[in-house]
Length: 120
Image (tube, rainbow, N blue to C red; front, side):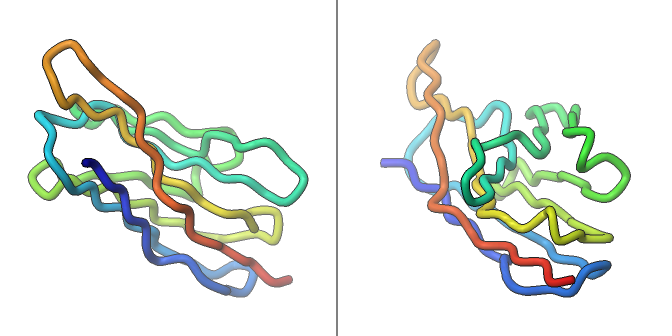
């Protein structure tokens, strides 16, 4: 069984910062791409940032220059440092990981989500 557990959400004022963390646990061979997504009320889930196992990153336009994604392959964790937060960043943030449990068999796993609320 594989589990992703997020932490670090909360309430912050506009202009503030938060750091989200996600840890993968269970039995698997390795983790490929990891990422953060978010879903605001009444909206579809959208990509925020992703990072490959080699450290290549990609960001949504809304996150560029304000958010930074990082990972620790030894600890199977991925983090999202969010700075200069805006009210429109308010959403439930989800961690996603492409996990290989058997050779040539990769599946996507999602965390349970963590609420981020930015007040104006």
